[in-house]
Image 1 (spheres, rainbow, N blue to C red):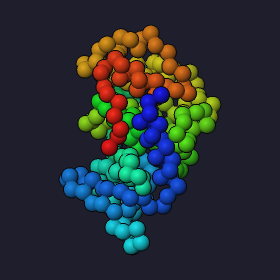
Image 2 (tube, helix red, strand yellow):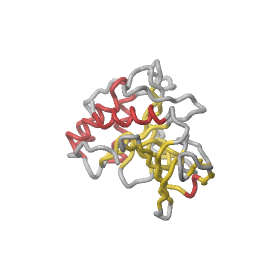
Image 3 (spheres, one colour):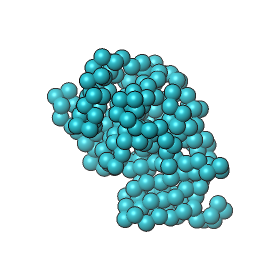
Amino acid sequence: MNKWFLFALCLVTTTLQAKYYKATLIYENGTTKSGFAELVDNKTKNVRFKTSGKGGSEKISSSELSKIVFYSEKGDSIAVERLYNNEIKNDGTIKRNKEKEWYYVYYSNKLKVVGGSSVETGNMLSAGKIEPGSEVSYYLGKEGDENIYYLYYNSPKNISGLAGFDLDDQIVKISKQLFQDSCPDLINKLEIVKFKYKNAIPNYIDFYTSTCGSVNTPIR
């Protein structure tokens, strides 16, 4: 299992317990602002931010920001980015959300894996392990691209909330959309690979890495 993926899960789980966390805000225009911020939910409209741990807070519109990097006391970090969620329909057409939403980046090295940590829907991250008890929606994308594609919802029963849902088919469809041109070998090999819900994400990362040549590096 990819150790950096596990690290990201652990860090997000830790940050979920803190009201304010050391953070750097990255604005749409490229400027940055350092201080302390509350964690964001998918649909957070305003980010609560303060320049010092004990100072007063201000609200910053999410529409002004492209990314937030949260830091642990040891200096480890994890990013949350504003991205467009896309759904690939059965007929091959793509439905794109009209607005960007916040997604935590669990892995980013050519392939990008992000997750929705939506408070109102009860999606929470487990303590560093992908197990049936974890509840989170997973999405796949590419580095440098603001579009992501819904993969599946990991629920206690691993049913993704849809009758007849085929995880392997979903992985192939998204992979074709993302990597048909840049890594055709991945698509060919995926046709004969079967993934299990429990470890689908770390196994897909490893499979992509071995096939397309990414190097496992920590997320910064």
